[in-house]
Amino acid sequence: MPQLSLDCLCLTDTPPEEQVRAAAAAGFGLVSIWVAPPMFPRAGVNAGNLAELNETMAQTGVKAHGVEVFDLVSDEALESYRPRLELAAAAGGKCAVLINAANPEREEVVRLMAKFVPIAAEYGLVANFEPVYMGRTRTLAEGAALIADAGFAPDGPIGLTYDFLHAVRTGQTMADIRAIDPRLIRYVQVCDGAMFPTAEQQANEAIFLRPLPGQGEFPIAELMSAIPPHAIVAVECPDLARLQSGASPQVLARDAMAALAAFL
Image 1: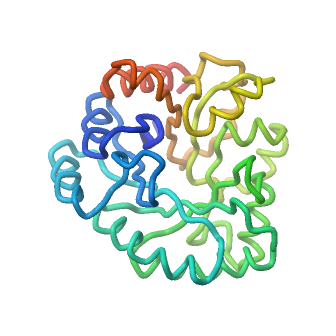
Image 2: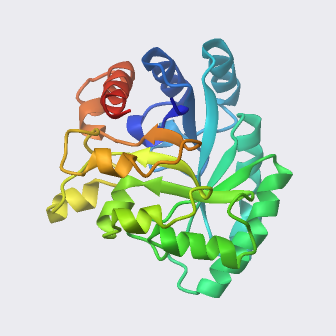
C-alpha cells in the first residue's frame, strides 16, 4: 500500500487540527497543509494554530507532507515565501507545492524554479511542481520539461504532482502519462468528475466540489494504473456544500478513504 494523504482541500473550510483528527479517524497517515493566504481562512496554518496543530499530529501520528501553494511569479515573490516556508517547516511539512498559474514567460519560470528549489531546501523541504489546467503550465509533459530545463534530474529535489482533474481536463492520454519518467511522479491527487462538465461544474470543481473516486465519469482504475509504486496517493475531493450542510469532517474523511480504498 502507498502512503495515503487527506489533502486540505478535501475538508475546505476546516481548521488544520480538525483536518488531522479527521484524517487519523479515517486511517490516513498524512495530510497536506495550506500556508498561503487561503480562500478559506480557517483552513490555513498560522502562528496562532501551529502549536495545537503540532500537538494534534503528535497525538494522532498523522504527519504533514505537502505544503500548498507557491506560484512562480517573480523573484520578489520567492523572497516573500520565506515566512511561509519557515511555517511549513515548523509544522513538519516535507514538500512545497509549486504551480505556474499565470506567468507567460517560460524561460523566467525555469529560472524561478531553479531558484526556488534551493530556497526550499534551506527549510528542509523538497518541491513538487503541479501542472494545472487553468494555469500556464498545464500538462505533466510541460512540467517535466521545466524541471529538466531548470537543471534537475528525474530523481532530484523536485518532482511532479499528478492530479487526475488536471490530467483529464487537458486531454492527456494514458500514453502521455506513462511517457513521463516515473521517478518524477512523487505525488498523486485522486478525484473524479464529469467527462463533459457544464460551465457551472467546471467553475466549481477545482476548489469547491469534486466527486469522490467512483462517483463520477473519470476512468479512475486506468488513471490509477499509471501511479508509480513510490508515489504518495492523496484524495483531493472538496465538497464545501456537504460540509456547510452539517456533514462532519470525520464523515467526509471516512467517505474519502472508503472511496479510495475501493480502487487501491
